[in-house]
Amino acid sequence: MKKMTIINILYIAGISIMLMSARNTTESATAAGTYGVCGCVPSTNSTAAFELTLNEDGNFHYIDQSSSSKIDITGKWQSEGKSIQLTGFSEELKIHDKWRIDKEGNCIQSRKGLEFVRLCNLSLCK
Image (cartoon, rainbow, N blue to C red):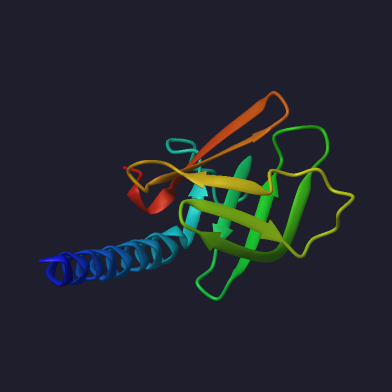
């Protein structure tokens, strides 16, 4: 009886680990894309006020022209679960470098001080 209980626990633990690792892989794969403000599609002659492109190769392109200091940088990004971390850019720049994927997986959110930003995957905007 005791041997059967231990085997059941190990079996359930193994399945749980496989499910959690599969879920994390899916979330990382779906993080790649271009995020911006839906409904604010810029004309062909201008750039977006705020846009973050996460490439599948681990590179990112960050554009923030919403304030007086215009920022246009590139670097690397990493994803762990529902968190996205931007790295490989000048530390002097104060940008939103920590992002969180929302429940549906369509938008990302960040907070820097009292400034909150929510960007959605532009491929899903209509």
